[in-house]
Length: 413
Image (cartoon, rainbow, N blue to C red):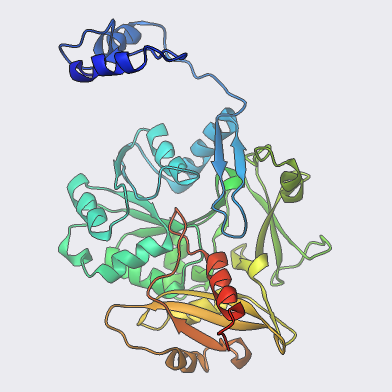
């Protein structure tokens, strides 16, 4: 406390059962403890020792498919995970990390990981595309990690060429599938290496990456891996299983299971949920995926968002990628709505680039010849914005609920 606030705080706390230890900062305070003195004394004491805690942090999931769950992070495993991922992504103490996401959950691990290996960190605060570009130029940022909505807002801002972003050597992205069209635009706009990261809260960080080499391979026509989530990291085992738990061969779609040394030991006060999610050390991700002969993993979608229409299993990501190829489309979310004839009918909501007057019917026509006719959405709605969670991930569950409630309303027809 400074002098002006010390007396007020002391008076206000006189009748409290819990008496804090007040520390004075700056000249002129009358408190017994002085910040600078304590720092100087601490520097002469024994070397700092880390204390291993059984429960260092409770990290909540985003709740994109249900209520958030509190993942328990042990100290030792969290530190080891940060070191392993830093090694995999190739970050160095000379990097300047642009922290763009909220300081909660998994995003804070990006920040802590860079602090862990000595990088300078520039923190944006509330996301703003121009603010991000200003900080890249002013702080000479070299690496960052963005979610797709942030990358989209940078590309649509029209401001990238107005700032010097040449210091950027690696741009990471993840948290949700991103259309190959967006990746190609971003590579052209920034001219640096790109790194895709796939991870879950339950694994304390990343488990798969699509490296800069993989991106170059795809961009030069050598492989179709640009639509993948990358390949498992060196400490990760994966398998893809059917509903009965049988391991599926390459090319067949099933649930993605992952095992690493960094699987969380439990959820806070949710033992039943944990036993459903982690079995025999394997994390049941709830993601439907396939694997190709070179080990790239392709996420079809969350199992809960699989569309069963007219006897077909349809995965929204393929349709979302198709719609995203249209120059006027900004963001897109595809899902199934209950239908008495089809079981589920395919529905889409999109936002458009500024100034576009594109219609949903025109977008349906755009899909013809690009995807099978039975995968074309029955209706495509144009929305001003799509709801997003704290990390900027599109909240598909919320969009579905809005549409269902609207259809159930008495005036609906």
